[in-house]
Amino acid sequence: MGIKTARKLLMVFMVLAVAGALIGLVFIEPGTKLSLYVTFSSFGCMVVSMILLFGYCKCPWCGKRITANLMKAEYCPYCKKDFDTGLKHRGKK
Ligand SMILES: [Zn+2]
Figure 1 (spheres, helix red, strand yellow):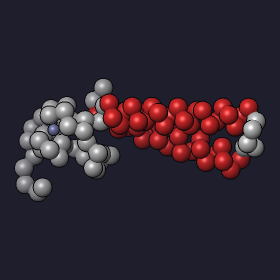
Figure 2 (cartoon, rainbow, N blue to C red):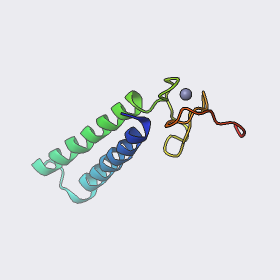
Figure 3 (cartoon, rainbow, N blue to C red):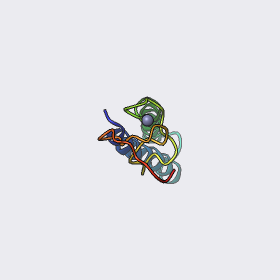
């Protein structure tokens, strides 16, 4: 899985985790089966997004983890290579 796929999935799972936690807190009575279910689902989403973040959000060329500007970055901030093409970006740091 490439970094572009990984960060898209990461976004989805993070949104799901936050939405699940909010819905669980606001709309669902604590202690019910439904609230347990929602809590575990959002916790599961959180775990998956952590796995994605730490396991897959890294540069395909130098292997360094991308955290800063992860969602928008088109190239690696360390080796400056484009995630798709591997071509070096020059100019602005
Ligand atoms: Zn790199």
